[in-house]
Image (cartoon, rainbow, N blue to C red; front, side):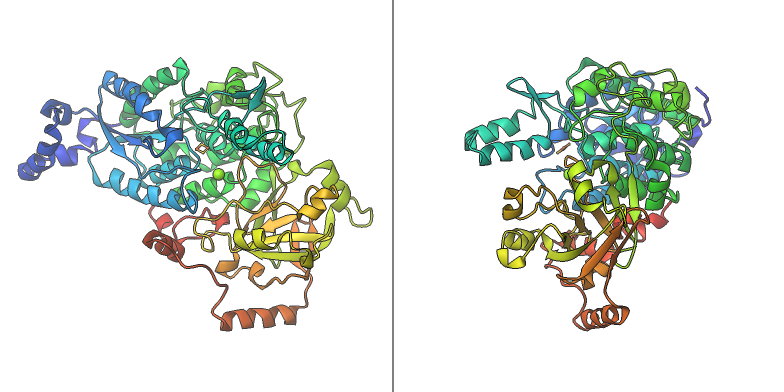
Length: 587
Ligand code: FES
Ligand code: MG
């Protein structure tokens, strides 16, 4: 250990050992004794480590942290620290209405106040369910005290009649089986529930596995800590090691700003492509970077990430699930394969254990090439995102690797205009409007239409809805048209593999061009030039914009809670991380 600070520099000393102010010291101290902590634990120079607890009955994905925390405590005490468990505002991805994304910034804000305002020297971040990971990393970035993340780990693989059933993705299949009469309503519930066989987070490569892998890719977890399934013994063991390590990090004064550098984010973008990460990842990583003062935008995602091959064969893009990812070597194997192929831009980036990414993972390789492919034989050659721009929005992302052969044939194979298409816009104002109108024959939706979803961004549908991947009308599905091009200012679930153009920024409710698009307009999408434009004369667009302004702007539904309205006042754009404007100044 490279000890950089002594007892006198511990942050908690300002509370518990202030020689100039014994009165305040006594006041700060006495209440922490009332449940059995001793004065020696608080005053003899032991670092006081917070465990940011996201596990609770309300957050089943992270609930196993309540057990793991016992091992974290053991590690903290073994390394000479004192432990204080602190509650974090609960976030449950599938249970929270209108969306858990609304609560990411709320959990962030409250954890910043907790870490800043109390006598804490370092923190273990209990990450897992989708938004818990970015919320906690953002808070650590702002307060910038030594911090280490600990995944709760994915659930075991789901199984049903000999086949793997994965979180989220099984719902799509179960719907088809129900519609075809192969299962009844009870069968539907049983099939979906089979994908959740144990404690832990989603076992597919959705936003949870993505963000937990990226927390490791950024260097904020111990190597190998992301992929170990929640019930495995190694999960408890790495919890103990994480507890030990955070105490050392306090003495080394190793802070989030030392680990999450621009280089670390560039590594994470590459690793996100290689694992087939969720389209929610750019929102979260751009947000974490903003809270560190590290410049990062969607152009970086295209430049650094687009040409990286897909190596990890997990559902929804592939076949396997979380336990298989672990058996194949997890994040260290992916990183090792990338380093071997010279595709990891910064192997020297420092990580939470004090060593570099290259030192930790340089020798690791896939232990099952069915699940983690080598770079020489990838699942897809280019797995990253492209960043589109035009008069509809400044920035929107598309995962080009999930474009199906049928979709490519229909929309992208005109020899005179390769990789581009034009279509007639069908515009929906939010998910309710979509469900109401999509099957209405008077809309005249056909193969030459592009479906648009607006009013689904951070302000429009507070937090942003995962609704951009819209199905075609039932009468087109019956004809065999499985997908229409979709564009929108909302998000898409990480468990869906649709090639939508999403996270459009600025959103309609924030003055974006989508607000003045009308059903029937011609729109041109060019994937070579990375553009998306309404083919409408400029004076007509100006007139529409003037009219909308006179009407008071794009209409959004009323807020239902105080936080929703505060959030809408302060929140920024998806491409800038959906952070609270002003909050990023506290770096
Ligand atoms: Fe919590 Fe997927 S719903 S991890
Ligand atoms: Mg989600």
